[in-house]
Each structure stands twice: as structure tokens, then as C-alpha cells.
Length: 171
Image (cartoon, rainbow, N blue to C red):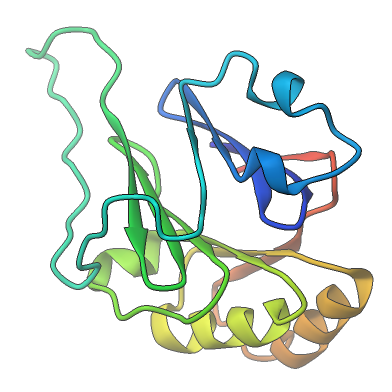
């Protein structure tokens, strides 16, 4: 999985052999046409994705050696406060802009990206609720500094990183 954050809630995601772009129209200074070029799916984080219940959702199973050699399906689901991106063989990706949803045990293996001026609060709430594999904070320097200061001593195995606009993070 590779995440490239451009600012706001605009992010380009390489996952499961596919390219997805969230909120390409909500960023200035980047040509939206260039941002979505080559994308397999483009979506908004404003509730336009089909919603799922993240408590009942389960990740797909990896194919066996007997299965055909094809790329697995990549799905994007809406949920309260963001989206869930899933690809077989990859960690589930939660994109969170508002509230932290309740989720099943799968969330412990998730990569969580939090956005906005409330990103430090979202990161702390995600850590408390899920204890995920990784939390990526996409926000201003002040948000990132607050998140790192508040969570530094509480991570207990969860990685914490800052996304920097225009730079890719390989997970």
C-alpha cells in the first residue's frame, strides 16, 4: 500500500494493484485531471460511498495457490466519519475525517489515516478504540506536533507517522 496525501482530505492510494483517489476536487495547486490520471476509482469522503457496518464487516481472504492468478477486488465503503478501503492481502485502510466508528477485531490490523485540524484528537481516539497497526496523521505541523506529543508514550506497538503533502508513504 502506498499513500500520497496532497492536502485537506485529498489522497491517492495504491492498494491491491489498483489506484484510488479520494476528494480530488477539494485541493488547490494540483491539477485534478493529473491527480486522477490512471486512477481505477475516484470517490468523495462526504458520504457518497455505499455505507457498511464496520462492526460486522470482515476482510476478504487471500487466494490459495489453486486460484487463478488475478488481482483481487479492491472495495471502498462509506462509514460514519470517513471510508474503509479494502484489498485482499493488504491491511484495511481507514480514512477518518470525523468520528471514530465502532469496528470489529479487524481494526487492530488496520492502517488509519486521520485528516484535518482535529487530526490529533482523531488519532488519539483511533488509538484508544482500535490499537491499529499504524496511524498516519495528515494535517498541519501544529496538528502533527500535538498528536505526537499526546501519543508518544501510549503507542504500545502502534506506529505513528506524519503524512507530508506530496510525498508518498509506503506501508
